[in-house]
Length: 226
Ligand SMILES: NC(=O)c1ccc[n+]([C@@H]2O[C@H](COP(=O)([O-])OP(=O)(O)OC[C@H]3O[C@@H](n4cnc5c(N)ncnc54)[C@H](O)[C@@H]3O)[C@@H](O)[C@H]2O)c1
Image (cartoon, rainbow, N blue to C red; front, side):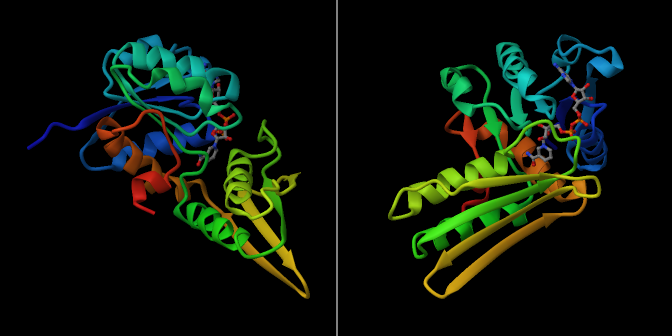
């Protein structure tokens, strides 16, 4: 039997980090070997030695440096942190470990982006409303920014849909794409009502990051064959 994948989590004291730690501990074929977080007084360097994969759910200002440190130590990286430019990591393409980045690990959100991109080919204009809990630090969300980029590339006009950001207590992660054309609108909406929605995608990325043929790879759809 193959040995289990050793997983360390950066941002382990945070909302997503804690949920990831629990999911890894319950997942077959995986072992949680480290929790890095300034709130736990544990620097990243302390957890890399015993890890095959680092999962990063931290802050936009840390994700790039954390990924560089992990890759330099030969540890593959799965990044869920949003609000940084994935292009900042393109120089790692020939490094000895791989990087996988997803602005959204929920399958429903990935499908929402796919459907919105398809719809953008056929309808005249669109706008995006993204709604998140009021402690989210970045705006617009990584999911909305990626949806807008994909829709602009697919549409005839090439126009980037405007993004409206809502931050309120009571919300988790939600997005609505509204497309308009003569005499009609189409609304595509996704709601993550619980952080558990992201866990199947995170676990899939942990299992696949070591086998990527292109690094960095961006988007869960790349692992789902969509
Ligand atoms: N990709 C997705 O599907 C998805 C889903 C939800 C949230 N997110 C993103 O995940 C990130 C974290 O969200 P959250 O709600 O858990 O935030 P949070 O504020 O609850 O947690 C962030 C944690 O990171 C820690 N941290 C800060 N700098 C660090 C460093 N250098 N090394 C290690 N840990 C560090 C903080 O102490 C904190 O505990 C955000 O960027 C958010 O947008 C992504």
